Amino acid sequence: MSLVITLADALFSGLKITLEVTFFSAILAFVVAFAAGIARLARQRWIRAIATVYVEGFRSMSALVVMFWLYFALPLFGLQLTALQAGVLALGLSYGAYGAEIVRGAIVQVPRGQWEAATALNLSASQRMRNVVLPQAILAMLPPLSNLLVDLVKATSLVSLITLADLTFEGKILQGTLGHPLEIFALVLLVYFVINFGLTRLVRLLERRVSYGQGIGRIAREVTVT
Amino acid sequence: MIWDNSFALSVLPVIAQGLAITVLITFTGTAIALCIGLVLAIMRRARAKWISLPAEAFVEFVRATPLLVQLFFLYFGLPVFGISLSALVTGIIGIGLNYSAYTAEVYRAGIEGVPRGQWEAARALNFSHGQTWVRIILPQAVRKVIPALGNYLIAMFKDTPILASISVLEMLEQAQIVGSENFRYLEPMTLVGLLFILVSYPATLLVRRLEVRYGQVR
Image 1 (cartoon, rainbow over the protein chains, first blue to last red):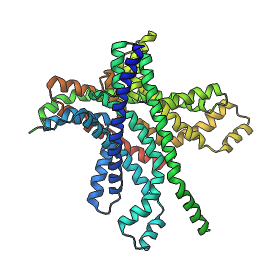
Image 2: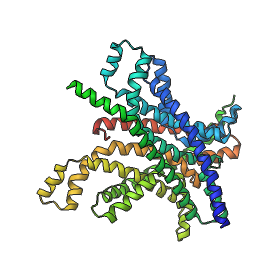
Image 3: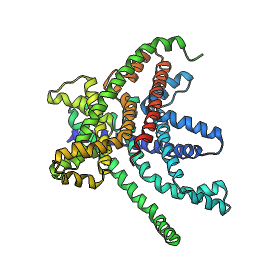
Image 4: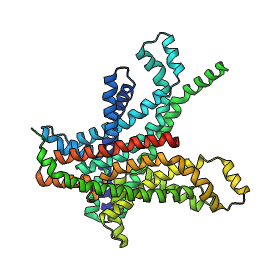
């Protein structure tokens, strides 16, 4: 019985760290993805250039290498990040770069007529983006962004390699002290599976919510056109 | 000056050794993923539930769980069954199996993209089930998904550092070892990062050209 308690205790405290890392890096990735995705479509060349270097650079890198660099190499510049900061920063920046491509792709696929109509209605560039283009683009972003979120949850396991006591780390420790690697790692895998399963369901629900009004609008538009 | 050029040059050969292992893992792992993924994709289309369900369960489970934990499961779990493989072999099998779940989905998209008429025509021409797959369906399906498979090759390359966790001597592990020996991580880690960009960015451009040539799925 006490074994079950030790096991549950360790995995639960690991789960908290995993969710914490997921939460913070998801927020960072989300903000960075929007900023970089929109910046890649900016009229100013230098803004586009910076965003492109960031996106292509981080997309060609391994998130784990970024994490190790931030944790082990950065202190030489006199900046010692905590494991949590290094982990969140590495994951947020890496997945932000992937997300930026999704954001850009979704904005580009909004029909030209929408942009032109917004201009014709005398909306400013930022009004056009906020009120016309983004509401339609977000709908197209949701499915690929939810896939990316699942990838991010899985990638949080990497923080265990820079000594952060997440779910994977706790599993490793338990296996070291108790043995039984098959049972323990199967259990850890199962917990990740449940998190991701729940997450995909949640996003699907959200998707239906968001697309509710939009779908009707789209039908109405088609009707008036024909 | 923080960056030490001579130190960077002195660790470069070790890092290059790691790169060779990284490339070896990527190609053998991809070979496994391409074969098993194809088997999984065909199994998922089987009419018999006892064939399609296990394949589906495997794909869904692997895609929802982290590679790192899967590697621990294999590396520490296989010896329980009396199978003891080296870290490198375990790592290659692990990453290959992990990616087979993704390539299976890619193949599936390709197979579903082959028009129904092709199946019907093959049947009308009296092709057997196996002949239909090998001669008619797969050549068309695989051709369309070549760029997508190329993307997974690059993704696997970027995932190989995870094998450092089970002490496979790929690039990151080598960098970490020389780093801890010399108490200097900056040069080895930066070199690893640069090498990753140097290999995977040109590879990405190549895949984009393939996409132009073979078209894009999804």
